[in-house]
Amino acid sequence: MTRPGIVLSLILGIAAFAADRLHKYVQMDLMHWPEGRFVPVLPFLDLGFVYNRGVSFGLLGSLPFPVVIGVVTVALLALIVWWARSTSTLVRAGLAICIGGAVSNALDRWLFGAVADFFWLHWGETSFFVFNVADVAISLGVCLLLLDLTGIARKRTANPA
Image 1 (tube, one colour):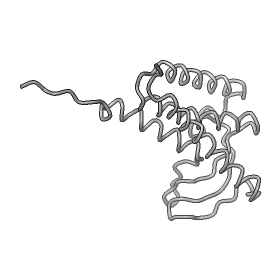
Image 2 (cartoon, one colour; image 1 turned 120 degrees about the vertical axis):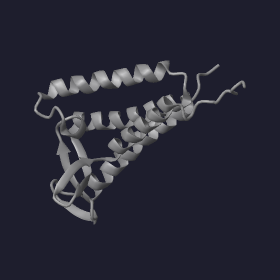
Image 3 (cartoon, rainbow, N blue to C red; image 1 turned 180 degrees about the vertical axis):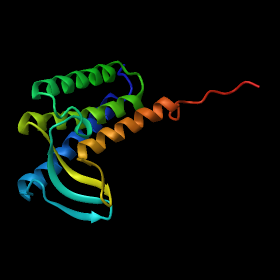
Image 4 (spheres, rainbow, N blue to C red; image 1 turned 135 degrees about the horizontal axis):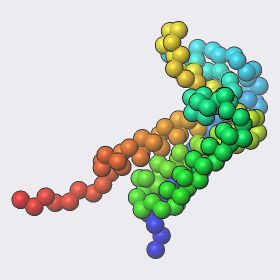
């Protein structure tokens, strides 16, 4: 008997990875978008291209590259172990989407020494962060994990009166 959600979660994880790689290929390799150039898309969102040398939202950017790689590796291994041990389809799906995005960002670190980011969220002069499709996938995966944590996806049992 297979554990719940293995095939679905693998498909979702691969889709998250592939969507990010495809976007990076189109914007960087086909369009040859120059680093540092941003164009407005919405009043609060610009499309551009920069390298993020840190981890999440530029955190740990001042650490040596091998340390950042170590942190990323440990985090990925922890997510994979959690995925393998999970018995919940929702948790497994959320983790797989997170892993797919994280592996794509890790590949950027391997190829470029930094993560390629494209979407700049801001309000007027206040800058929030620059992110990519992998970051969106990771955020979506975390939302699925939060749904499980709140119990929304669990079967409800009859409440005896």
